[in-house]
Length: 278
Image (tube, rainbow, N blue to C red; front, top):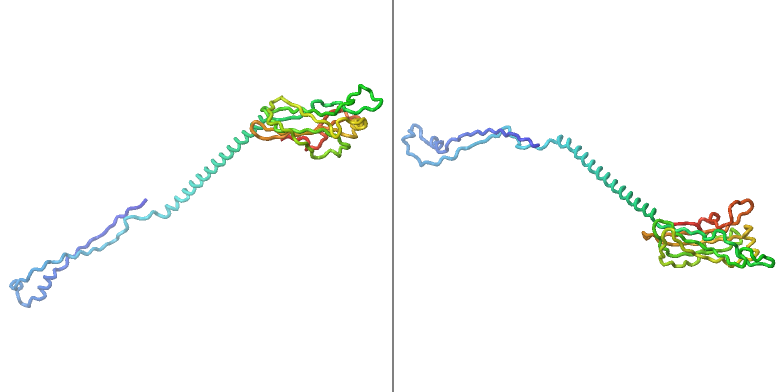
């Protein structure tokens, strides 16, 4: 706060003698009577000379003490730091809240999204073969084509829109002849066919390169020397407009020796690229 200082000044007034009186006394002859002399023309007296002497004067105001300003500066800086810190905390909290809401929405969509599964309609169909002389007429698979029928089923909580699908059924002379990456045929368009939960439709593929096995090839498959495998893929969209794909692959397993598993289409022996879902 500015400090008011009281200015103490002393004024000294000194009356100077009149120049006319001084001149008159200076020119009067000795021994003459001033009263008898001829009066001169009256001259106006000059104003009295006033001489002022200022003693012990101080400025009316004084600047704020530097020490006091210095003492208030740390407090001001602390307030600024606190304001900046609180703003930063609020911004971080807003970002964390936005991320949490986004993840919650994304998780809800994943929970309610459509899922497509593909499973063989017949797990262990008879092997169709060309009979030879002496084969019984009632042998299962005699003169029948080998067909792989697969059910495409909706299992999610919301409907799926099917985009396209493909399926293939092949024979391999050796297990090593099965490609590590599936070689798909051109996909058939499904034109956004809706598929609700627990609903399904079938896709069918005929064995390649020959629909009916020879008697020799059939016996080789049963003995685990040749292999039949089927695979395919289905592309679809969920109700949120996101695209997905389900890949499926099965190998026709025939147990050998003491293997307790039944003969049926199974997935575990095929490379991982044959069974994926997004």
